Length: 168
Image (cartoon, rainbow, N blue to C red; front, top):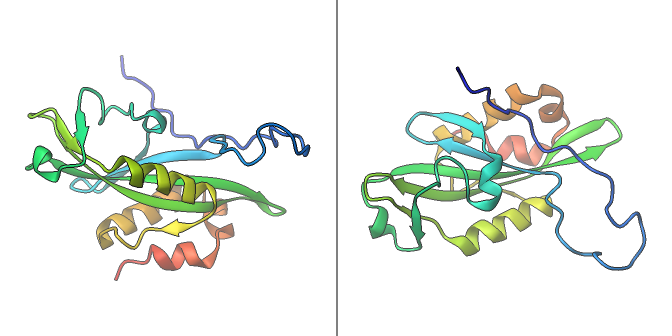
């Protein structure tokens, strides 16, 4: 039996503080962040909700270090943090940041910079666009993925995102 893929972004929820200035104000909410994984070699993008907690299928049974040599010969990926926000016209892609990931399944080792992953998730939540370190092919894959996922959200997104994802 074929397993059905979940291809939806996280749903935007109401303000957990309901406007009051008490406990929880200023804390990060992951309600509107979704991780998208790009397989650089295959040129494919998928939503991997498990990546929120480093438990995507790609990351399972892999010991990650911040030493690139540990994963030498591995497969390159981009982990993209996509934040959805709401404007009067509807939802849009508000924050998009990319992090490098290399996985060598034979060695069961991988490379990633945990501080970079955490900081980029935070920057995505804060509506930043950080994709300049990506290769042009992967930028194109991400742009097509976001357009195909929801053309309206793409159309409502800021010009900064569309410009940043244009492949040279």
